[in-house]
Image (cartoon, rainbow, N blue to C red; front, side):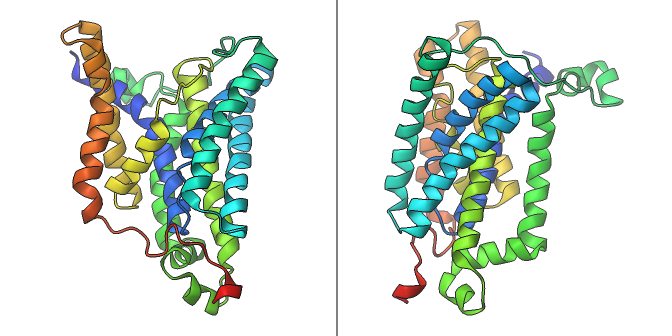
Length: 304
């Protein structure tokens, strides 16, 4: 088993979890729990494949982000504006996304399970490293979404720690009443956080459909939206912590695929590995982390 090929495979598996987890930070830091990320990622995967099929991969990415943001807007509308329970809304979003993807798949492709094969984005060779044999598995033919995903970790850290938007977003998630008293528009920031999380989930879905498999496949997210939430919690709602956790899950998935290929251990047991890891992480870490104080709590100025 080549270590660099293993790391490259782990990095590819990490991306949808990382991008969605980073997006989840914006939503949760604003005070809105978004377990609908699984459905938003699935929406991005479906419409990413559709856009790529009819306008090329760049158009597919735009479609994926736009349609996932539409689902996020629904979640924001019912939870922020009307104060509906955020968990209930997230579950409804997941069910709705699955049903809509199946409906449109039958309507557009004549089958419920897959789309036709789609073109991927032009891949990139990282200068210098791609010419070194040892690093070629990691540095040659890299998807631009992988580079973008890694860049988003640094961008998100900068946004949350160095910009007025980020500081106000965190204030809204910690103490919305105090933020409101200081003139911060709580609802607008919560809308912004949820929409950003939807955009990131859509990008992750586009990566799955356009870059990873080259088509839409029913249920292709396989719980990655939930794993992304676990990665965010493991990372203590911070970008670099989420990166570490997402890579841990991605490595577990890549390792399970390698072991399955080698037929050392029965397939069914190995496929459970990333999900078992998620359960152990949540059981062992969740009490030691510190979520935003007002996350999951609706806020209404009239009720204060």
